[in-house]
Amino acid sequence: MSKGEIKADDVVATIAETLPDGCYFVNMDEFLKTLDKADKFQPFGSKLFEYQIVDEDGKERVFAYYTSNYKQAAFLKFFSRLQTFVLWFVDAASYIDIDDPQWVYFICYEKYKNDDGVESYATVGYTTVYEYYAYPQNIRPRISQMLVLPPFQKLGIGTTFLETIYKYYQTQKNVTDITVEDPSEDFQHTEWLRARLPSMKLRMEQLQEEYEQVEKEYQQITEKLKSI
Image (cartoon, rainbow, N blue to C red; front, side, top):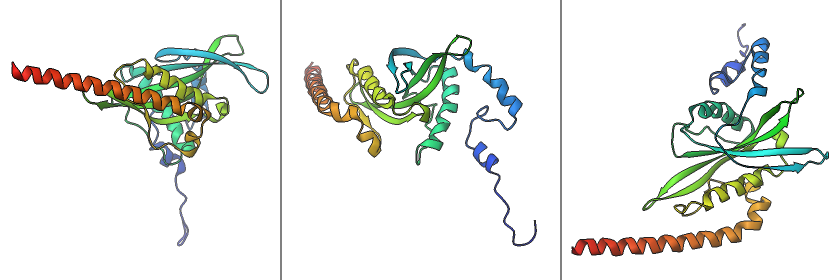
């Protein structure tokens, strides 16, 4: 390099520093070998539900939603690769600490049949929820990240993610409320939030009243124990 010339950055090396092992390839043959595993992929975690839609082209498509947690080591390895997509599609996004047991993961897959007629799954997107502690023995789930990959956007996936999370926690009596971490403008204006925010607020008020009643009873029991 002659004096005054600017050396080009090693873009591949710079990107590789932020990616987990096995997440990228610089050799085409090695990459093609991994494609054989795609048809054998099976979703991780517990299945919550699935539903069918007809897209704009008149094609029937099936989407399934699953939930996973830190107890599944194979899933965490998979998710460490999946979450690299946020760096490309979400402004100022960062990785979450998958070693933290408070994270709960919701993943959407599309179920389809490949060219050989074998049932297969494609990863559509994910949402992460952090379960904060709430006194005395409750939790406050906070939706942290949501990513729907570009080929699956405008199909109502994000709306269904929110609805799925709400239904998941609605059945748990130790949930005080559900919040969102730094929601984007697009997130705030989803049809689901606009349509259901009043009912969500009412439900949260009911939960707050129940919490206050439990707190009151707890204080009464504590006072009685002091007098014994």
